[in-house]
Image (cartoon, rainbow, N blue to C red; front, side, top):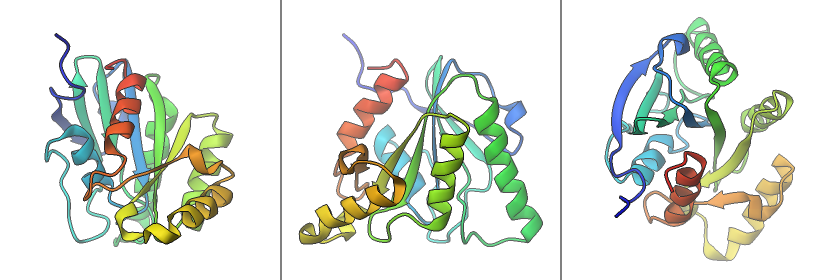
Length: 196
């Protein structure tokens, strides 16, 4: 009998140099601005508290890799935006993210996380445009959807889609706190990684 997706998930390494990351045949990466709820989403997908969460934006300053099988991994990239730190340090994080994205042959998709309540920021749009120009497969995930009133949900989704040049149904609408949309996103991630 096949195990549930990601039941064998485990933290592997926290690394500042993408060249030192272990090789996985299939990877999916999560990127987004600081305080978008990246670590909480990863924990919800893995059903384990493996990714460290914090009330202080910008705590993820390295690439954190979680294996889900001997051949597949989820990758938590440093947050961008208003993370505190010297300009040189923020530039280093940006270079770290770009280096990872350009040099991982097993990268199946990049999930760009946006705040459902705030909508895509200029930095989110820049990331989406960069991924498109680099011809890297990506999808948008709107986090913290529980913070959007149900009566406003459809309009917020349409606005976010318009800003990212997507259709509304191309944006996953999720909440780690309420488990909204988590099962569907987990199934998609497992399929991408060959774990479905």
